[in-house]
Image (cartoon, rainbow, N blue to C red; front, side, top):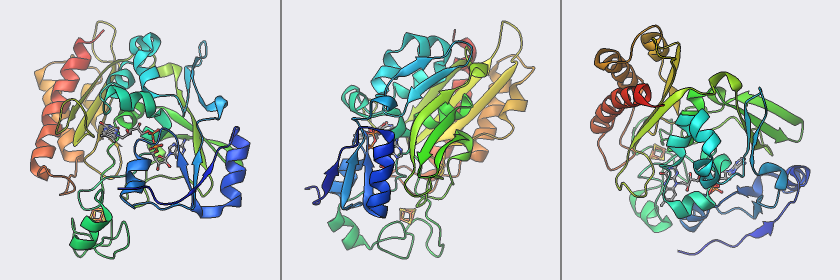
Length: 328
Ligand SMILES: Cc1cc2nc3c(=O)[nH]c(=O)nc-3n(C[C@H](O)[C@H](O)[C@H](O)COP(=O)(O)OP(=O)(O)OC[C@H]3O[C@@H](n4cnc5c(N)ncnc54)[C@H](O)[C@@H]3O)c2cc1C
Ligand code: SF4
């Protein structure tokens, strides 16, 4: 499979990147690490006139600890830098746990946090070559008008399959977004639409430039567990992130989020109340597992059955709560 023909843009500043997007309108695809975009272009899922390689924008790299104000992570920071950060491992455990499960070491060297957050949604009917899709019939997400997963419906249910986002939801992270009208900040919980073919709330010509981890979730215990086909390298088919604040006594604050079972990563409603004021034990973990399974709405977007993936959300949520409780 070959890449389609495109022109390469290489801005050195955020302002240049926005100007490039404005000049070339909707025909520009942003390339960060390229570990998801380039395989998709080879499958002819995208054939942009322009690919804008933003890796030369220095301002979007690196992890900055701001005393008393949390941490700022540039969107172009490689996942391996987060994995290698002892500060993040000690203070924002759930993010560290989630990031180290992404793909493989080589892909984590290349793949960025911003690319992971903005990852395209996935579906077994969509992430295929052009020939495969043509022979089976195109679908709503690309070139067609029906959904093989939910025939009769008009919505795309392709699944958000990134690992970092559920951890960032648990940490109450915010995103910095830059576009033609300036800079804005958005809580990551408001960023995703839960619609498979329009996954995120970015306006035309906007991009994610930074991620903020608040001081308020610093030091929370955390755990992340995921189901995947190959343990050494694979997108999640179900994933659960748990973060809790606990100082020897009962849980003081908590958040649980799931990924890869809905078109968006989602916080589990009710999990916070189920944990606050309680000790972590089998009983509280079981309640959270049931709530997580209720939030998961997997469909036949992957090779594994929806029933199995939903059950694994229940099992992993329970295990992740126990593991978070036991973590330092
Ligand atoms: C074999 C394989 C296994 C994988 N396994 C996993 C896995 O287990 N878990 C997982 O989460 N991912 C997995 N991935 C996907 C990918 O490697 C990671 O998600 C990676 O973090 C993507 O980052 P990137 O910088 O390479 O993104 P890119 O491929 O450069 O971009 C991804 C998408 O985000 C957009 N984008 C990138 N940066 C920005 C920005 N700053 N603002 C706005 N839009 C932007 C791009 O236009 C593109 O649509 C896997 C990929 C492969 C090939
Ligand atoms: S969920 Fe339906 S519309 Fe969306 S990619 Fe899959 S088959 Fe296509």
